[in-house]
Image (cartoon, rainbow, N blue to C red; front, side, top):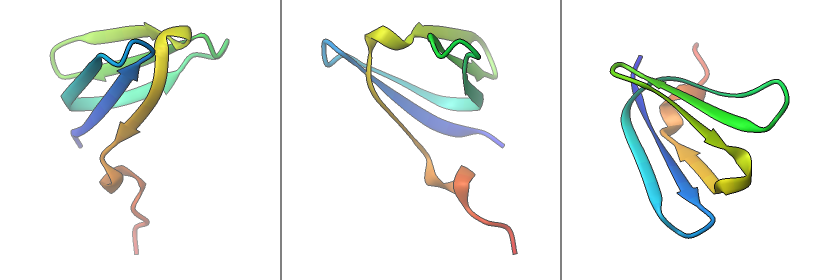
Length: 62
C-alpha cells in the first residue's frame, strides 16, 4: 500500500513523498527513514520540526 508522508524541517522547508511504502525511525532515534517505490530517504531527526502522513495507514481493519 502506498501513502503520502510530509516532513517539515526546522527551517520550514517541506518534503512530501507521495508514493511512500514504509517509514521508520531508527533504533537509535536519530534518523527518519522513508522508503518509496523509487528511493530511500534518510533524514536526521535534529532537522525535523514535525511529520504527518495519510491517515488511511492507521485505520483499523474490521
